[in-house]
Image (cartoon, rainbow, N blue to C red):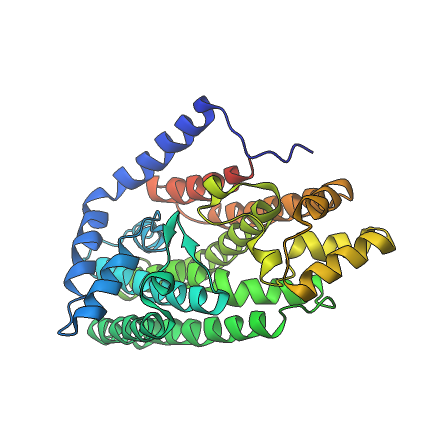
Length: 343
């Protein structure tokens, strides 16, 4: 299998064009989200405002807010509350990024210095708490107990996922099932919450009469999120810093056992297993070139690659149950584009 993430200019241009078309479909609503976010980040505490603005404006495609807009409008929603809901999702995501970077001691995200590297751990954690609380203030304004239930449950489970991941640092016994539960809680759940609440908003507004469509969009978000994290984990052993916006081998250096290594430990020689286990337990990327060669040779990269494709196909299958609209097609495009990061 080809593991290089190098892509032709033509392929990258095609992806960029497709993504642009998706954004154009909800351009007015997306602009409203981008306008609302800084307005809701105001604070009398200068450092709160400064760090909040820094992390929110640090780049990224804002896929989760985009999915709120697309999922609600795929069910014919015509109101304005999806803009506020999209901002809530972005605040929750941004808060998790601040906390993640502190826990992981990351110095780089999206190609920029992280907030914890720039201001320190304590301010980053506290501003993350501010973003969580601001998100819940906005949830109250939506006045939907069902939506608040989904988002509060997701927030709680995401926190549990972070603890699960931390507890498994250096754990060479982590199974694939255990790993999948970690990424479901830690990453996939917010994608799931974005599409789920977008669909709920449409249903509560009377734009959609089908509860089946709510479940369909919830499952789409779940499988999209699982595929998204599987691609990220594949990239950590097959990509490069420029492609990911973070350092290659970060997972290994943090002692995280992800699917490429879980699969490699099942299929490699005793000597190769020993090298991987030692690197994980020592949180060292010293032997990264050797480990990269191992995961490629034993088929672990191909296995992870195929797992990401399988989850994407499940997401796309969910969409077949929705009415044919440009918004449904855009959700399909997002899943395909996310997978294209495999190269």
